[in-house]
Figure: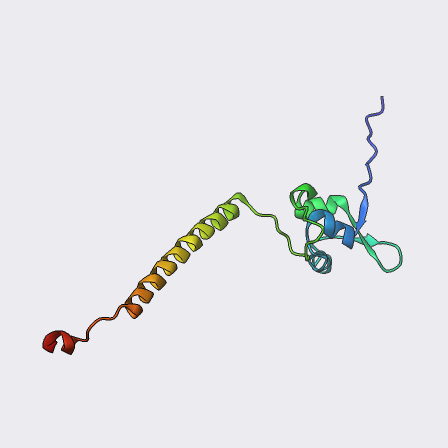
Length: 124
């Protein structure tokens, strides 16, 4: 019985394809190739291809990094802690807005309320 397994070749992706699937900017991928963190192979023309197994090794599974198509190149994967922090900051912002509105109301009341000056109160 043959127990030898054939190594399954992992698909190779262009830098643009890898960027879309992993949610990492093209520049980040290029830097990782330049500094040796990520290996690549020659592709068609002058293009470089990245082996999927290399991308998984460096960045993890792609499903955790997928970003919307309209994204500008920055990863928007948020952790639970970041989502909680954003909610906390939104609540704090709302409380501060309400406090500012109350302060403006007090200021307006003081400016529009006609009071006698201290000497008018004394000598009236």
